[in-house]
Image (cartoon, rainbow, N blue to C red; front, side, top):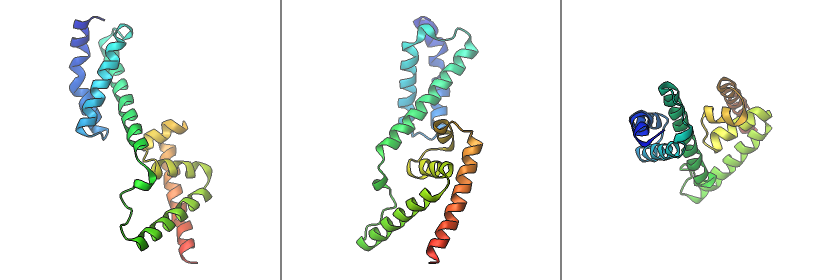
Amino acid sequence: MGEKEFKEQVLTLRDLMYGMALKSGLSADEAADAVQETQLRLWRRRQSLPGDRRELRMYCLAAMRNACIEAFRRRRNDLSLDDSPEQPDDRADEVEYRDTRCRIETLIEELPPGQSQALKMSCFAGMETSEIAEATGQTETNVRQLLSRGRKKLKELWTRYESR
């Protein structure tokens, strides 16, 4: 694929790719960066891009989706568990917060492995259902079910813990 064909077929998808990135939850700046990064990758692979216009469009959108996932992973890796915004300012509240968080983490460990893993990925790593499904090799429906059952069981365990 030459430069002219690339401009006509790939660069015209810029607005579509940008909208996709925004809808996935990226900020405007992150979306623009993801689109630019994706287009650069596509340019480097222009010789191996599909020739059919429809296949090329789907290929570009898949590449954009992957760039969005990478952006979320970078964002998640930049966050520390101790940097969560819910942390209190007062020393007494901080001790209570840490104690509660530690107890919740312990209770999560008591859940069945699938539920425990899904809750950790959702709560502590900030992953979306689709990302958890991809990482664990399960369907999104199964992940939603694991999260729902895990939260329900966690609530039961917490109620028992508080009633002691």
